[in-house]
Amino acid sequence: QQQVKQSPQSLIVQKGGIPIINCAYENTAFDYFPWYQQFPGKGPALLIAIRPDVSEKKEGRFTISFNKSAKQFSLHIMDSQPGDSATYFCAASMSSGTYKYIFGTGTRLKVLA
Amino acid sequence: DTEVTQTPKHLVMGMTNKKSLKCEQHMGHRAMYWYKQKAKKPPELMFVYSYEKLSINESVPSRFSPECPNSSLLNLHLHALQPEDSALYLCASSPSGASNTEAFFGQGTRLTVV
Image (tube, rainbow over all chains, first blue to last red; front, side, top):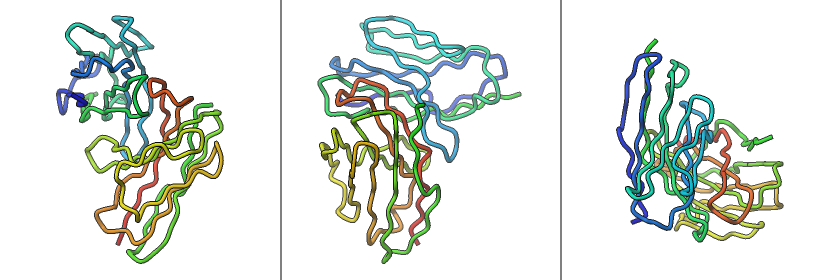
């Protein structure tokens, strides 16, 4: 119940395409869902996060869609660029929890020029 | 400023050495974390400090010893490590004790145990 399932494992898109990364969870107590971007040899950088009271959040070219009833959320990257090539992790945590962020397994994205 | 600073960036140590990793943040965050990340895997939680007290130890071997000298600093003391401990060690911080707030990661220390 503590898992966050992330798919796909890897993704290749052309420049300008819209890669979509999906995550699913079981524990309805989760109430915070961040996405992190990580470049090789670097730490994860917080991209965007959402709480269950909204269904969509946009920040620049990044959009999170959230479906509470389906217990799923996804990251869309608009007008993707080669510089977006990185590993993306979704995560989940709960306000009544113990400071734990449950991470998905990661998606390696490659954007071709 | 959302910066978490980790030093050193790279560390090579022998199995009999003692070394320390350091982490610093000046965002006024009261929760600080150590994570371990192996290649192509997500970060794995090791320790959490909340208000300078250890609140979570994820059954980490005693050869890893955390320390939180004050609200801005977090150390990880390493002793008698094994080659399988080679990984990227990440420090993170978040504003409060509630886990449903943003966590900011440092750039990590790439540790190689020889």
